[in-house]
Image (tube, rainbow, N blue to C red):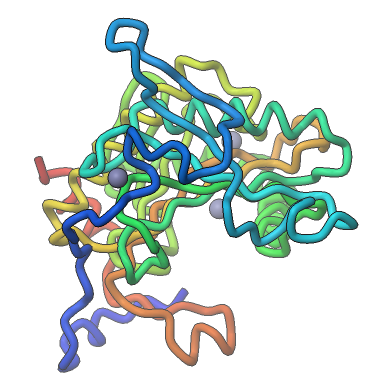
Length: 293
Ligand SMILES: [Zn+2]
Ligand SMILES: [Zn+2]
Ligand SMILES: [Zn+2]
C-alpha cells in the first residue's frame, strides 16, 4: 500500500456514489415473497412473533455449484439477514455464517467458504434488501493463500501472530469489547478500511464460541453505523478471512472481518500491480471513527 496524503487534495469531478434507496418494487427477500426464492437451507425464527428473522437460500443465479456444473463441487448461498427491507445489517448474520461453514465443513471436497457482503451499487449489490453471500469453493482462494503465506513469514521473523500484534496498537484502535477489537489496519488499502478481530487467538472462524460471534456481529453493526456517520453512507464490502476448513489450528493465522468502504475506486494501477494508493492515514480516520456516534 502506498499512503499518499497529497492525493487527497487532487480535484475530483465525480462525487463518490452513495447508497441509493429505491422504492421497493417486488422484493424477493421481503416476507410474503418467499416463493420467489429457492427453499431455505437454514431459517431462524422468532418464537414470540411467529415469523422468520433470517433465511439462507441457494442463489437463484449461482456462480458455482451442482446447479451450474455438476462436475465441480461448490455452492452459492444468499443470507437474507432480516425480514425488514430497510434494515442495515442483520443481528444474527455472523451466527448464520458460522452455521453454514460448519455444514460445508462436513463435505471434504469443499476447501473454503468465502463470506462476503456487498452493500450499495458501487460495491456490487443488485438488491437493497439486507443480504450477503457465501460461496463454498473446492479450492483455497489465491488471495487467502497469499495472506496465509505472509502471516507465516511474519511468524517466522517475529515469533508472534501478525494479527495478535495488530490488536495492541493504540492510535489505530476504533472500538473494543470484551471479545473483539475493531482497528484501522497498519496498511489500509482504502480510507476508513476497518478490521474486526477476536482478542483471543483463533485461526478458524467456525471454531469460535457463539458468544464471541455475537460480539462480532454487534461490533460490525456499530462500525457500519459509524461509517455511515463519518463517511456519509458509503457503499462497502465486508469479507471474512479465515483458515481453510480442513487445515489444523494455525498459530500464525487469525481470522478477521475486513470492512472495505468504496470511497475511492480501484483503478488501473491497482488492477495492474495488486498495490493500492490510499490518501488517508489510518491513525487519522481511526480517530474520526472513534469519535463518531
Ligand atoms: Zn425487501
Ligand atoms: Zn493471533
Ligand atoms: Zn484478510
